Image 1: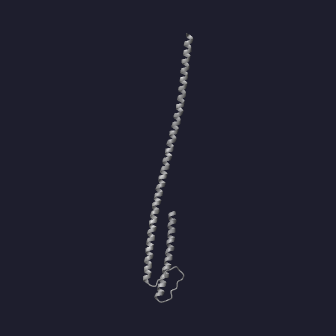
Image 2: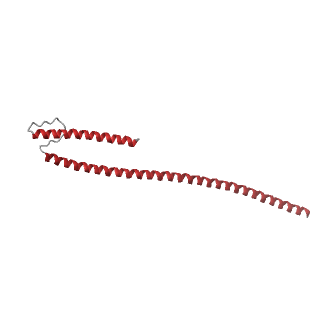
Image 3: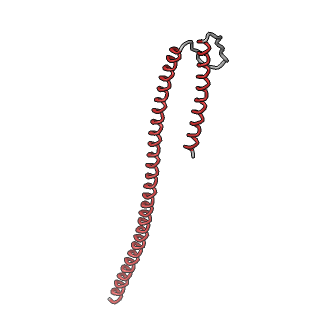
Length: 153
């Protein structure tokens, strides 16, 4: 849709430019014809170059064509540069999306590792508590056996 709007705008600009060119050319031809038949050359206030002969008209047209071709070449170069920048920007956006996804996956892995670590800590704490309880039971039994031996003596 945006491209269609852009093309429509470009077509309107080109149409307006062509219309102005046609009006200017018509005024130039009228002035040239009037000058050739010896009449008074009247400028109706339009921004038009007046010519007294065909050679001047051809020379001016040649200069204008050179300027036009130069402007078109600059415009094409600018468009190519813009297109390359757009391609580069799209590439950067794709890389950003890929890196964002990789980060999300890595965060999930880290979260799983943290959960494992916490589970192992809890198991180790239970194991240590059970081990201490067994050691306490063994030492109490040993003391009871000692006390029984002493009483039996």
